Length: 221
Image (cartoon, rainbow, N blue to C red; front, side):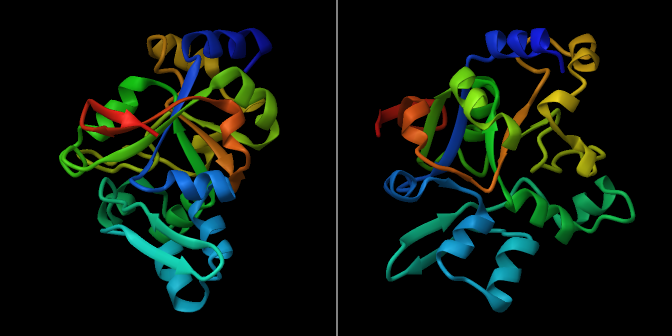
């Protein structure tokens, strides 16, 4: 991706969106916006529990707690399945490998349409979620070297498991923006923006924060 292409992406997607579980905001302000693996380290989760959460499919929300860190709720992975991943991944990457890769990153949607597609999904539309809206330009300036871009919804295999491997994630300079410009309209040339491990002090990039159910904005955070 050239500097001009990055400028175009930021112009098309001036905001990025993170959907968290209800009640997550207090922990995010305290500890930063953390990947699943970072949370497990913070909460001192190890052994079989760590393997279960980080390398295996989560069909439901997992609650973890620690005397010092407090309480956290780790999101389910209902849009994915082992069977779907086996169809989508090459033979040298297992579902466990894919879960671990995703669990090492913090994810953002590049468009509000993608966010609402998730909040309106059958599994989530009746639940309340917390949404953080961040300034894309400021965020990319701050985390340029830690950012990955992805052209697919990497955490979904339903209804069709689109092929994928670890090359789906590209650092900004390596992302083939010109390819996706030819194939997709503005706002869809990058689907996910991902960050390694932890986003500290997320409030400095925050444009808006609210609780949502389906498409209905319920209240501010």
